[in-house]
Length: 193
Image (tube, rainbow, N blue to C red; front, side, top):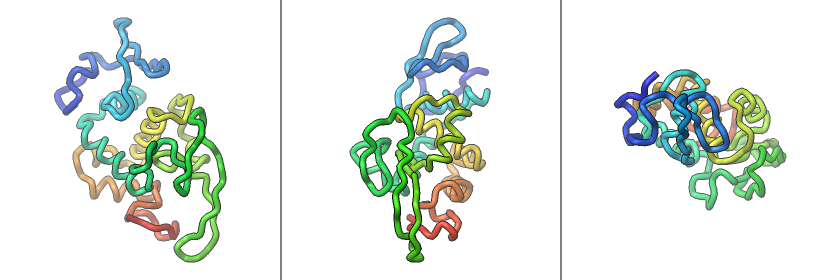
């Protein structure tokens, strides 16, 4: 596959050939033997996730906006480090792995509940344990969290809507994944933005 002109704002970030599927820390190895450095929060993440699926997710700015929406509704965006945010606003000491810490909270309906939500997208430990191995993610760092969020968005069939700038369709599609979105099921009984 070749990168096309739909990579708005991504000029110069990728070569004309799709990167190989090898990820070594934060470097993609290309078939030619050269490498491309990944930058957290950049369009590289879209290309990296896309290379896992052998497709190319264009229109990086829309995807970055969607990730920003989730971080905002989950309450992590304004934190000093959204990616190191524990449930309730605490700080995760190490991003080597999902912290798997259980936190008790009161739902909107007054019932007590527990959660292991953590990180910029407030991944539950069971969700992280399901998604991370399938993507080959070795840590809970910024790049890994963004890639996992893209996979969850894609799994809910929200990536195409997001790429096309359909924010309403995107939010509707991914509501079942993130309790803070207005399209989340009422059974979550949690505050929505």
